Image (tube, rainbow over all chains, first blue to last red; front, side, top):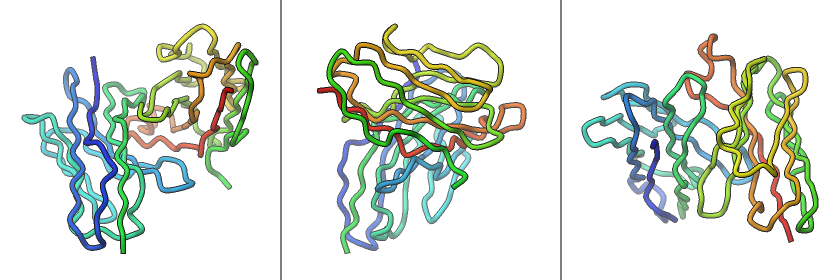
Length: 112
Length: 119
C-alpha cells in the first residue's frame, strides 16, 4: 500500500544551521508530494508541494525536490530560524480527492 | 476567523461513554476530512466527505466511529463506547472541490483539533 516514512525526531539545531528532514515514500504510480507544518498551538498548514518527478517545491526558504528514482522528497533549508521550530509532516496523495497519507512527523527545535 | 473551527478543543471522558466532536469548515469548501493524530502514530485518515457523494469511510477504525455532515457544511464525528486507545487529537480539514482544482493541489486547511482523553 501507500505509505510515507520520515526521519525520527526531535531534530535540534542552532540558529542559522542547515536543515534536512528526510522523507521517503511507497506508492503505485505517480503521487503528489507535500510538506505540511504544524507550529505550536496552530493547525497544520501546507508548506510546499510537488506534483511530478523532478519538480521542486519551495516556500519560506524551504525546498524539497520530488525524486522518483529514490522515492524521496527531503525537506531542506539553508539557514533555520527559531521561528521554524515546529512539527513537519511529509505526505502523499494518490487520487484527486485530496486524501493525504502522512508520515509520522518530525519535530524541529531551533535554539538561539 | 474564517478558518476551520473545531469544538471542543479538549474533552476528557470516561471509558464507555459516547463523545461527539464538531467541525465547522471554511465557507464554500465542499470537501471535509477527519484525521486522527496519536502520539507517535502520525496522522491517520478517518473519513472524507465531498458534496453529496457517499463519504469515504475507509479509515474508520471500528464501527464505534461514525461521522455525518449536515447540509454540506458542519460535520460531527461520534465515538461510541469510548476506549482508552481512542485518546488522540482529532483533526478536521476542509478544501475546495476537486473540480475547482482545490483538493488536487493538496491544500487542505486544518483546524486546531479536538484533544480527546479517555480515562
